[in-house]
Image (cartoon, rainbow, N blue to C red):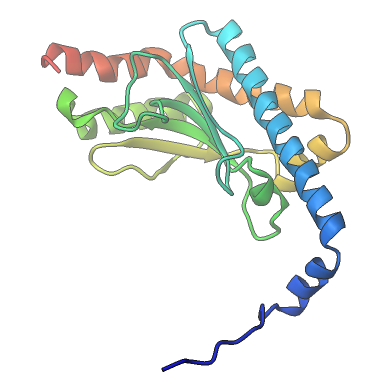
Length: 207
């Protein structure tokens, strides 16, 4: 039996407005893709600067434009994780455009994220608390622990507000923004020897 179908897009008012302005919307959409690509390369350059200051940090993990929150990390080739595109190391979280532009979001976070592959048989739980205490003492900050028994995930909120960071990007202060991000990575780089110890524990166990 033939059934009736609705020949309608069922557009909401805001969608109808965009549809009526479709040529302009498509041009803006294409321009935004170009902006995202430039922002991605901008973060590549930040990671390059961090690597120049700390040559041990030789593996960037740039996800600045690949999710709504946006994350960028940098670690070492010898700091693996179970995920091919995410290296264990130091991360800045919440720097995606959607996050920075959302009035309901908090300031971005920076921190240490380490999740050794299971095959390394590292007792992460026993190493996490000493690292947290040491990091809080060195940074002079209270760290939020978001890791489970197999993950070190220690974070602090950036002192720069979301609006302040967005303002740097929109008011031609990109260099100030980049210097700010490099300084946070430099602060976290103090813990390179401590992350090395985590993975050295796996080597001693034959992982």
